[in-house]
Length: 338
Image 1: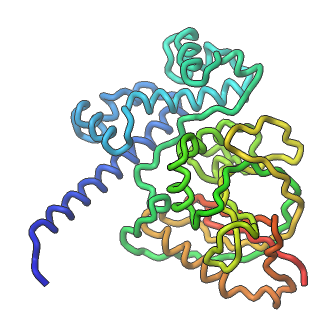
Image 2: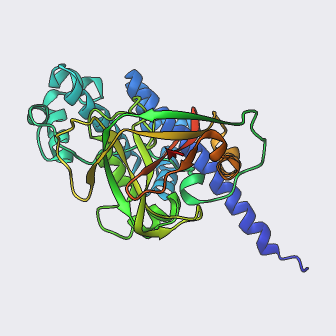
Image 3: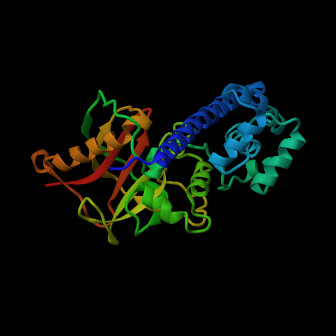
């Protein structure tokens, strides 16, 4: 096999890009931390550039290349996303909230809020509605982009299997009848105006009272957002051997009567029995693919009959996927008694 000097150049470029993605990810994490802690001094371009060890102009350019947006626009969008939830969920004054998130005055905050969401903060508080929030960036998203792991360190925890009863609730979601997996789902949705990952996740982030919302800032189950799969005779035949429609959405209380923003759907999920396959915390960059394979293996080898049940493939039953590397990776599959 011949040696090509160009291969070294490509490898060096890939390593450099990965290193920058890691650095930008650290900045993104720092931005959210500073916003939560109201540390405005650390949220300047000068402070963030100093953290990376580069000039302000170079940091700004690299952030734009990797994220597709200007750093100052991202900062403003994240501040407004945090502020909107305070407007909706607290009784704090508009001026107090504006200053809390780095705006110079109540007027400046109200102007920025209206520009972003179409209504001033006072009107939004009186009549909350779904809007698209600026969600947290993930420059390194190995699960989303379907890329391989970086190294292999193995997990010290196995897959737990247990049974749960999930009470009746509602599910607000986006669906795709042709996709096969999380990555393929968002690839297909990105081709439809207004249904890309950033827009849909930002819209779901603005929905209050999500059953699984733990106050997280990621577009995953910590913020109440989960992948789901409906048994559907008109859906796509999946690797598990049955027809399904893939969905991404949020679980809501059974008495939810709020708006259903386009292009989302709302359906009732009756109380049901489920079996859970759960892996504990893992290293997102180095273990994601391995953990998923371990869960898939556990699901394939599970003896339903020995436990007095069967996987329920009745049309309309739903399966959930909860993904948060800091807590778990778990599938929740519907079952029926034998």
